[in-house]
Image (cartoon, rainbow, N blue to C red; front, top):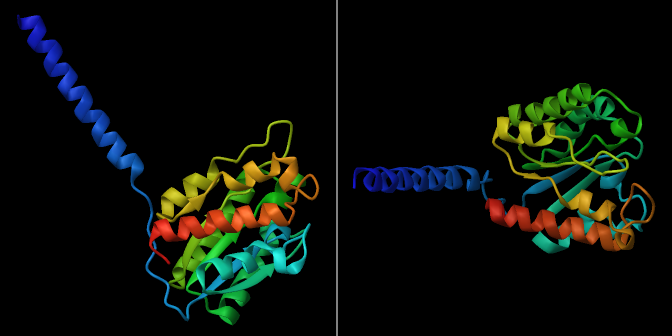
Length: 208
């Protein structure tokens, strides 16, 4: 009888711990609502610029039509995160966005830059924006190779700063030949998938 009670109590405690874990793990970072006149800055490299498709098919252009907000594109093909960090302060001062969509690191991986350096640069860009009271969303870039994967540091930075992150869509696009224009860039259909996922993330976070 005692053993039965102990088993039942153990099960109750186990289920309680699982429930607490699920509640904590399912908590998502939120964003303040973006006013109708708010400006979003899409900042990054060729993935933000829209290489591989026509200018009107880039993800920021499609995103603008999906959420009815101004989206300013500042993507520099070939740029590494170190140079992005140097460029960002002037762009933030020029655009004065309410929200930064940060997509950087892909060229670092192609050039086999140390991952710790890439992480430090991405982290510094997030902090720079937050210090100016600009909200941030990270769009994680996968590391190319036999197995395309997303480095863990993106999620760690998002957790540190309590900001939303999209970790899967670029990996999904760049492992689907029907959504790519070449090995490292989406085509028009791929960029639309990216824009749709970011729009969905912004809605779930409460921004739009």
